[in-house]
Image (cartoon, rainbow, N blue to C red; front, side):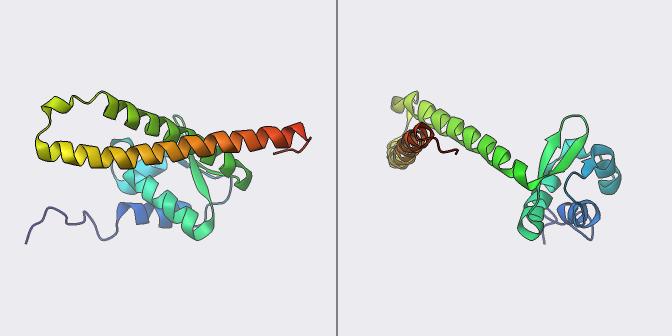
Length: 155
């Protein structure tokens, strides 16, 4: 039996983080890097994966989310801050979609084998559909927001 994927301890690190630091954390609570280092018995910043999985559990079970506090750790954000964080992720996703299209545009197709070219063309069709839908919907939403503001409605 391979030991490649054996857990390091009795409990997964993300679950340790959740159970010890987030399970009862209220809005505004800060989990520091020092607390994470001590709990995990290692330098947390060398592998931050446990906080991301614990954050997902926090969202699923307690309807709370974390935001990084540079140089300090992570803060449980207030419910009214979730829209801002979601918007930041939306903008990041839009940038990533634009980069996806750019990478496809600059691919030297002459360097691909026939099988790679077939895969590239298939994936490119899907990518362009995704990108087109994103652009179309963003334009439509922007236009609807403009119309609502012109009528004095706050969005």
